[in-house]
Image (tube, rainbow, N blue to C red; front, top):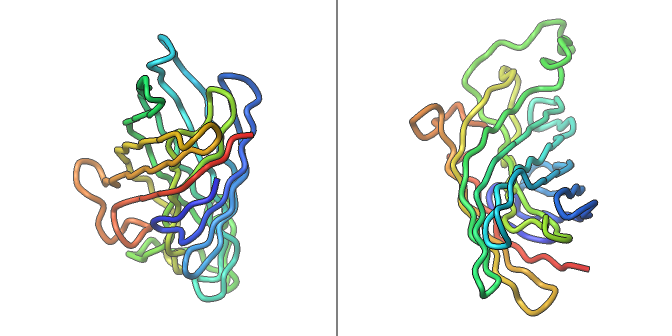
Length: 213
């Protein structure tokens, strides 16, 4: 799969279907200022028939140490649960909810920064998530999330959690190509995420095309 969106200017993913109910893949993307690397896993939690299923998936992203963005590595995960409907045309539409969690690696490990002090929690801006996804068997990614972080945090932010609601669509193009698009709104509780959100805007957007072997 290859695509673009917010925050990633470009993103690529290769996913392998280990069974008809589970797939895992590797992904790499680049925002205007920092690259991100990670994994994505997806599984079917419930499938009533060929036209309806409930899926769970999560990308786990790593943002390496970057001089211009606080000089520290960061990690982010975006687990979601989605209900997915398939139509006779092959089009799939999904909707669901999820949680975005981001944290500085040093704070996760209880380490100190170079000056010997732990981070203080202050209002700073950092990266965002999300996504994309390759396909194989019936667990193919029919909505890419996947979208990912746009800006890395500066010193002062140890981590936080936000909630999302998302919807996606996948449209077959011939026998092996699939157009995918996903959009998610990011919330802090019941309100749209504000400046404490690690991305520039409270939205994650992805548009891409995948090829199935």
